[in-house]
Amino acid sequence: MATPKAAHGVSFLRRRRGIPLFTVFGIRIIADYSWFLIVALIAVTLSIGWFPTELPGRSPLQYWLLGLITALFFFASVLVHELSHSVVAVLRGIPVRRITLFLFGGVAEITKEPTDPSTELRVAIAGPAMSAVLAAGFWISYLLVGTGGNRPGLELALMYLAWANSLLLAFNLLPGLPLDGGRIVRALLWKGSGSLRRATLIASTSGKVIAGLLAALGVLALLTKTAIIPGLWFIFIALFLSRTADTSYKHVLMREALRGISISSIMVTDVVAVPPDITLSELIDSYLLRHHYTAYPVVESGRPLGVISVGLVKRVPRATWRSTTVREAMQPVSEEIALSPDDALPEAMHKMSVSGLSKLLVIEDEELVGVVTKRDIATYLQIRSDLSR
Ligand SMILES: [Zn+2]
Image (cartoon, rainbow, N blue to C red; front, side):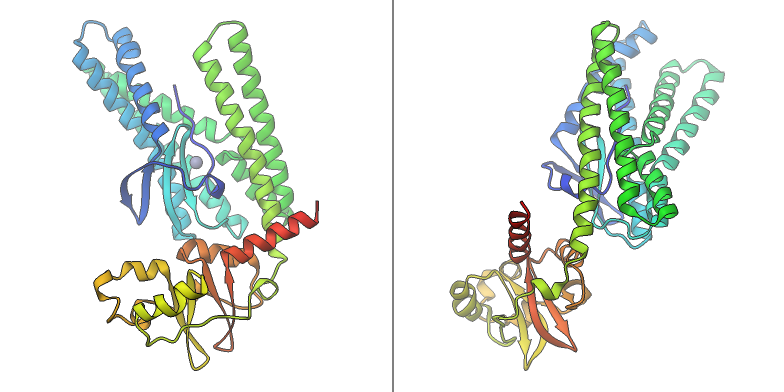
């Protein structure tokens, strides 16, 4: 049984619960609780079903070891597939914060949608290309080991991994969003027509058609009682795919709408600024507890120096709040926390997600002209959507 992985850069799947495993290339790898369930399920299926049938006469311990190791190699394959998407994204200047492994495989949390079709194409192809290399590698190893014929356990494990990676490759290349094949189709259409919205509409419709076919196959398997478990899986996967395909399109529509909104139309110009040389204790008493904002621009004679927030204060040991100045604790002005009044709304949302700050500075000619906060954006969007109803 192959577990398909799906959906990259789908920010709405963010903040799944899970257990951090390790960090590689600066990308945190997180295992969702559902992932342990599927690893266990596959290890058990292999250990008590597949290996004893294919390789009779061994001890249960041998079956369990073989099953567990094969399952772990399979999930390492899924992770390497996901990582290769992420590494290409990082090389093309798109930050990737983490990869979450869950029931249906993995989701790379790419913090920004690709800005051009050729980046989208490269990022989308990277995963299947890696799966193709893995499948070929396992097939070749299987054939090499098979010639000896005296290591059937290893031989079977290699065959399983070769098949699993081949199925993973084939499934991911189905030409509908949110699968890699759908992203490739979308990138090619986008390149041809110049319209990301139209390309996404076509690729996500195709994704829904694929989901429909999978669901039909699943229902057929259930009705004919030929393959109950795979049938249930098909239906589960189809539901997941069709929901995600839909969201991909809505996501693009929303981004297009937001792109028309400039920072100058949502920024607040009536700003409470903080001088850099007061201590954190003074900041707490005179600003944090008085004005009820959680972040403040730090300004010295009209020039913005940085941002100070409750989160940044909490990083400083409490005992030194009386002696540490705002200047020492603030996040200094950088591209990451500054906007121009002409920037568009998605730029602000992207910078907030990268910096983790809920308030950004709007700077024009080296002077602070306003601030944009997460709450203001949310309120603005809420009012717009209420009015359009
Ligand atoms: Zn992929």
